[in-house]
Length: 434
Ligand SMILES: *Cc1c(COP(=O)(O)O)cnc(C)c1O
Picture 1 (tube, rainbow, N blue to C red):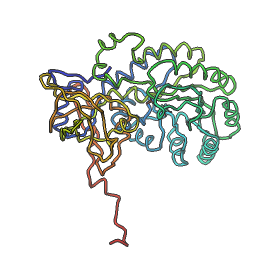
Picture 2 (cartoon, rainbow, N blue to C red):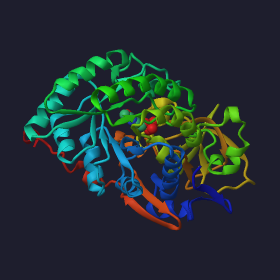
Picture 3 (cartoon, rainbow, N blue to C red):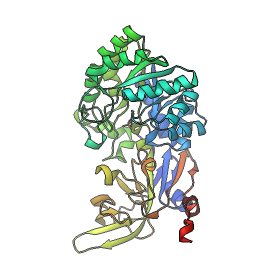
Picture 4 (cartoon, helix red, strand yellow):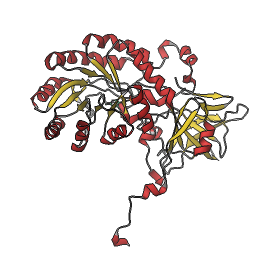
């Protein structure tokens, strides 16, 4: 569910007409619905009601300061994967004492930053990393709270590039080595064992893989509680969202009309499947959703530059490109694309919807049907709130897009479009070329 819908054939985010946002701030521009994010947070929290649960938002999905501030205000902790993300949360005024720090390559400086700011726990992925955390903690004169990331070896049934819980990828420690890994932790003087963690992948659209993974980790968590007195189990993130019928899925009626067997994952189904498995542990449960909280809460607004009619194909060329939203190029992912001004009297157009970047993979949609559109009209690429701006680049010397947040009838720029001057600020011509 989300708050993007047509009112009088004009696409709105909450009570804001998106054409007005596009006119005022130009395009490409990301728009985020604060109410959608808040609703998703509340629903997930509610669906895990029977547990002592902490939601740690996976910052990498969207690390705009306004998004972090909003979630922090709702009571969320954070799941970080870099020092940059930790600094963003601090800059947003968030308290990170409910937050965790994951990632396979933590540097000394990042570990120091985490420990100095009272991070709830560091999620450890290897023995050399553990030794480094112990060393940094020793220098600071603190005990570093940790959990080991365990790889439960389940297939999340998702895209190969976003699966993380298989024994053949770089994340975590195989579950059969878990006992030895904790034994190793217990020998380090400056390490405090606080929990256990897992994360099996992203965009998971059924409860099965989560149930499998939880069933595998629960006996281990119980053992670690008995042996080391751990206080929490983090079950990671990965809850999938609707991409294909994104617009329609904004209404409850759409969800009610889905046959039970085809209904996409809901937080209620997730909670109902996992709560009974987790409750008997008597541990605090951390959940680390990224995409679920922000994915359907964001859209990328773009302007049509040209309609190019080819011999065998039409191309609708936008001013947004793969550098702004890389998911279609990187994961072949589907995004619904709709006009900001709907006109049902127009003829249909079938076209590849592309950006101006010089790569064939700079294509948002192939052979997509939508109403005929021409130069200067606007479209919205839906479900772009997660892994959109946070993965954006400057390829082709393009400027990073603007970001806007909406709540109710209010909207504000929360990140100005990058200026060319700022981009080249740190560059210089070497003296030997002058
Ligand atoms: C990326 C990531 C998440 C969030 O994944 P989503 O699919 O966006 O929910 C959670 N935990 C860890 C450790 C991650 O790396």
